[in-house]
Length: 234
Image 1 (cartoon, rainbow, N blue to C red):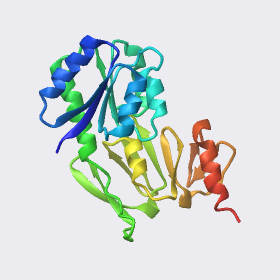
Image 2 (cartoon, rainbow, N blue to C red; image 1 turned 180 degrees about the horizontal axis):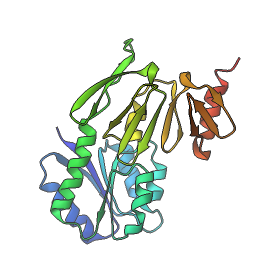
Image 3 (cartoon, rainbow, N blue to C red; image 1 turned 45 degrees about the vertical axis):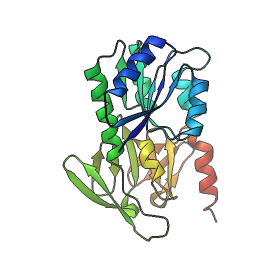
């Protein structure tokens, strides 16, 4: 299987180096080589992209600006000379952070990590089936979890934590990837939290109570959450 990769960097030498690295890995197929965010948006609209190699400091549109423009984000690896962006990168579900100049070994390690994310996908029900559970990998085990028992899913950097009344399950997968496969009663309320609406006990102004835990509602997700909540009110 080939994983489609897009390179976005305003520096020609950096683009060429990354292109050479991509050509050395049989699992990768280069779909685009862009010098700015606008070009990248055009490619992303036309072609499926699994992995995005993204510079941060670019003219007109930064790498972070680009990510905020993309609704269905590919797995993203920041490639930059500025270490101070590392924490912000994790907040945006960035899978890894490469410092320039990038060695091939470090590049290969980041790609292997991304492919691991892509290969360990949460198994969800097809639209016409009635499956009420999913399987997810955690360490060396594959665990079965029923949708109805999930209270919340929390992002913890490159991992997620699935929270139920009786256990917490960790898995190496991003919250964004998980969100795409969940039933409609699961809703994102914060960059770090997805909650199961059927498990809600109380909703306050900026918090949701589920069991004994409170989960914050962030400004970016507030409108969508309350719209969905309104649909279920008597």
